[in-house]
Length: 334
Ligand code: NAD
Ligand code: DAU
Image (tube, rainbow, N blue to C red; front, side, top):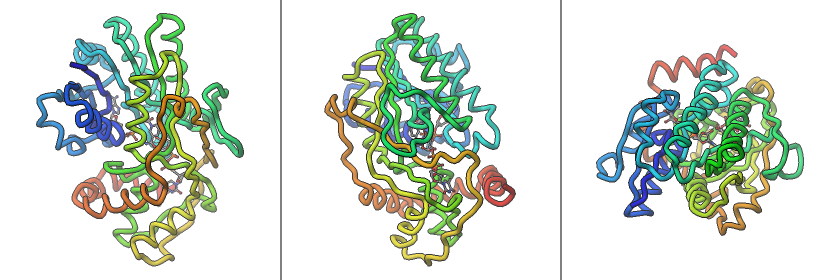
């Protein structure tokens, strides 16, 4: 029976991955290690926690003892745990350096000591910096521009060094902008959807021309699974789509789908150092037989419908004092 440690398994992509693994592999055992920061919640895996194949540990990936306990007896490690929001990294980078770099160091050391068979680091296309034209492939130089992106790029380099230096069988995935169920409503799509549902303005940064290539979370999970099982240790794999959409069109489309007034779209001051485009060459992962199953309209409709159907989930978050304080700082006092 496979045993896998999933760190950050109570966050957005991690919780979807835990569900994906338990459903797809009836013999799989999953240990989830998650600190339950503002972005993580047991509610994201409430349908999985009853399973006798899941063990949940609340703990921090920076804590050596906790990490060793969680990792003992597992074959593979998939690390999702991170501070993940670019705007928060601009407001205060400290926890990004702490978790995204120092935390990965603690995980790598434990993986080396316990001789895990595969260590997969979930990384991001933001390590390449913004790409005005063309596509980034895995051998491109890093040019991260936000503290979030820089902390992830630094971690990629450290992970890579454990392969070169110690022969630890590492893999890295660099995913694009992921959307779908259980995404904390600070990222653009769930923020726009939940604001629209509450007839609040949709804050579009700058002139709304920055584009992102959107990836449905189920496709991101199947890509990570594919790399984990068939990827070549030491390699990084880009994971993305070519569904490029700018912020202005995204806001308009959501207002259209939810039948809300078009004038809820509001231009606000731009993000500092805003990356205007990411775009990935995904030839390497396609050669493993992976391709995305969801086109942009399908992923948008699925995601909108999930937020329509799960009001209590996101209303509880949006009513929390910490979310309101963040919203005020980010959107009213900036
Ligand atoms: P998220 O913010 O929704 O979840 C992060 C999870 O990590 C939370 O459950 C949180 O409690 C946990 N966590 C944070 N710090 C921790 C710590 N010190 N110890 C233990 N747990 C901790 O993030 P997400 O959007 O699901 O992203 C998951 C991973 O995927 C991240 O590494 C991110 O960089 C990467 N990624 C995200 C996207 C995206 O579009 N969301 C795209 C590409 C890559
Ligand atoms: O590309 C992968 C990355 O995608 C991940 O590594 C990150 O963890 C994830 O947060 C995401 O980063 P982005 O910065 O691209 O996502 P965000 O949802 O914050 O912003 C997407 C675009 O929407 C970007 O051009 C900024 C814009 N935006 C965002 C917010 C929150 C707005 O116009 N208004 C907003 O309120």
